[in-house]
Amino acid sequence: MHPVLLYLGDWPIHAYGVMGAVAFTLIAGMTLGRARREGLEPDRLVDVMFWTSVAGLVGARGLYVWANPEAFPTWTSWLHLRSGGLVFYGALFTGLPAALSLMRQYHLPVLRTADLFATALPLGHALSRVGCFLAGCCYGAPTDLPWGVSYHHPLSPAPHGVPVHPTQLYAVAYLVAIGVVVNATWYRRRFDGQVLLTYLLLYSAARSLNELVRGDAERGFVGVRWLGELISTSQALSALLAVLCLVAWRWLGQRAR
Image 1 (tube, helix red, strand yellow):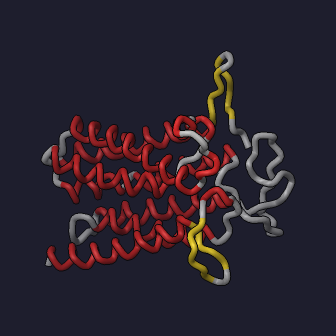
Image 2 (cartoon, rainbow, N blue to C red):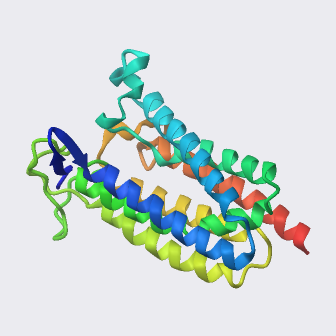
């Protein structure tokens, strides 16, 4: 675990923030490179990426605050992003509508542009999960498997000295696999929007399974039981996302035919 990579004077450079910046750069580079080959306007895409990131950050923070209200006694504490606390699904459910709205506003082909972003998003997301591993957040439940990892850093939120599932690395593995699938789908898609829906469907399934071996209570739970335990907020949102994607897949597929 290396939550702080280095110090610039008294200013710490956090691993999670660095990996997030690298992830954004990768997504932007892949998207803009493919956009030029598709004849799309790069300047418009840069605007979409910027404002989508802002909307996504608000949603990611908002969902974490909603799941952990006791950790934020005042509204100003919501703004202390350096203390951590972001949820991917919050970013998705605010960032995606913002992105689709901006694409329409800028007269971009909405679904084709969304597919374009979806070819890069899983790989960028994988890099951000490397940041989670370095920061020690999103840790797994205790395990006796030989690849369990133990955290000893004083800043680690995980139980110290207890082998836990490396759930962050599980996420890296399945996100890279999803990245391979969606990029193959890009060249074989039957309708615009198929690449995005493929990404979201595969992610919702993989995330639900990964949640079974997560150990961080901060991710939040809802009052629904499955296999004798409460399901996490992310599992509930994964189920909702999967249903929405299946409905959209059927509708877009029928429209294309």
